Image: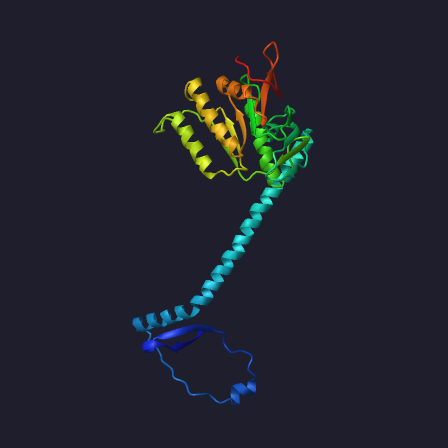
Length: 309
């Protein structure tokens, strides 16, 4: 290893530099070339301290080159890691698209609009994960929510409300990822962030009640969101009695809508939903899971006022 150095303050070695060994000299220069004055120090085989000092000098000399090589290796490995991740994403998109097309489920390329607009129009929107699990075709839903900042979804149990909410979130993520969307047609405004607030199952390890846990999660979401965010709420604030839960939901929802946040809220809180419906809010849309007279579910989500039943 060929290393150069200089003497610094107190005759300490500074400016250690790894040098490239001289190569390519002609044979005449090797034979007849004069040799300059040089000094050699030979470390004895048993001189452990001398060998240790020599290796320390060597390490200081190759330190910069070793660091540069390590950083180059890290950059190259990082590039291939990111490339593998991105290729996996695109291959996943192709596989999902091919599977849905072979099943006969509709797919389309979405039409995104600006962040500040309130646009949400779709036709035949369905849940991708459900479509990939089931052999039969999944029921799709239409939505016309231009200029809408709040969508409240009510209706019977097992009527497709949570599935519809999931499809809305999936479509938003897929659109903003540059993917296709699981619908016949889809147009929506781009959001700064997409947040979900779903009711959780009972957890024996919780140090507080379910309502406290829901409010703590909602507080974390509010701390992070911006006015152009989108929030999906599913059965939130139902861990207490209906009157108290409705009042909590009303205050939170009204504050978020006034701040410019876009909300989709699936709820069984009739007091809450009916109060908002009676206010005749111009930027609110009320949907209801359809149920036939005999009790059969069609899994269609249609515009309709909340029902007490």
